[in-house]
Length: 149
Image (cartoon, rainbow, N blue to C red; front, side, top):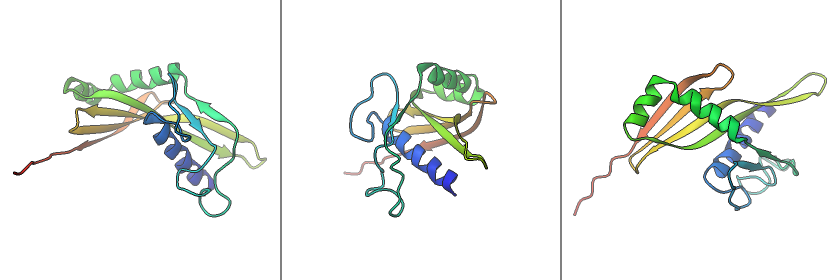
């Protein structure tokens, strides 16, 4: 259960950082920085214990982002979206955390979400398995607005 909740927390932090601001409201420069200094849900996380481990931050290297984009762009469905006017707007790594029986903690970004946008009418979320070097899912959301006088 801890792994699931920590995965959710990391994803929410990634959402904030990937949208151009860190969780503390600052703007990242060229890298996405995930700051563990607070909880995005208000208060201090789920219940009184929370997720505020404090301290460190995670910086996503340009090489990682370039690798994820390269994998996505090699997929024929993603190529069709790009040809249709979608643009890559964001990369959100999904970090899995494993705690072994001896207490050893391993964190690895084995999956990433590539965000694509088409004007104000379309968004696509491309799930990339970085270890296998392939796209595993594409979710396309479209919006139609009908203005009436």
